[in-house]
Image 1: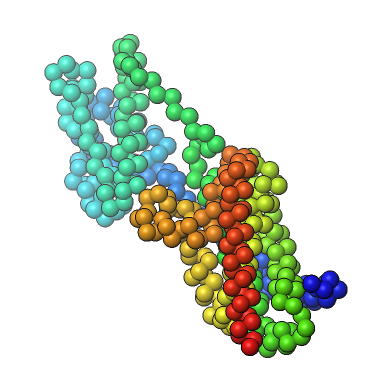
Image 2 (image 1 turned 30 degrees about the vertical axis):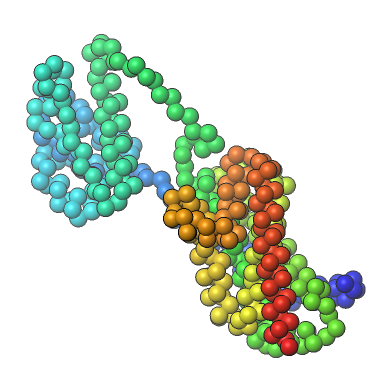
Length: 372
């Protein structure tokens, strides 16, 4: 490698980036927009689920239980005296469940002859919401029953006391693990687009062939193309990280070094993939479509960002091993919520750098062939 020639290429590429505002839109504006969308629109938390309570008993005890549901912070309750008026709401999807407090419920509470029962009907077309309604309805009823027993001075039998502890995310807020995962998805997209679109533009204008016709070595050429975008990518990561910490209140328990190692390792295959796409397509529109299909979609679906990989069919699980984001998503979630787990980080970085070498080798081979 000729150092003077490489420096000249690097300066030329950097000046070209400074003159092109679209590069900064991709590197800084697009990540902000995507992260805001992921941080505000994507949430797995369930709050204030609409349910109906059919209060068929006029006793004070039954009304007390109904008010326990009304005052619960988990439910938005529609109260009715009969089941039929709520059934249509459940069928239409306006409520996700119906809690039926039957007649004689108050009389059966505290009776030794007949157990007091309530009925919980949920909308099984949405399994997650249905499970949430059933579990939390039972929880509200159990808490209400213990309160009633204590008011009466009755000892509540509790042979087993459960004390759940949720490490790293005590409130089980989905944002805590979705935002770090979103950074990985954003990096996969912009890293690929940066080189795919910008280099494809040079192919369209014919300046790429002119550059390759000079005595410039392929290593010098690729390095001068990638390094400026690598720096831009790291700047984008810093912006996304600051946004996650200071705007979305995501804890950051790891180190900046750990975050830098992971993100730098991931940018290598992302930029290499974009370079390969641009060398094959030579067209900005086609390059953007291919980048979306090969970088964004697999990263979104097959990285464990939203869907659990262990729950996928074995064939799909095998495919996830060739998706670079699969290694970055859990590592970023760890560095944010847990801290530095270096064996995990080093393994992920080694795999990602291996992907990068493959992409760059293919890019060199395809570029040589195309120019010939």
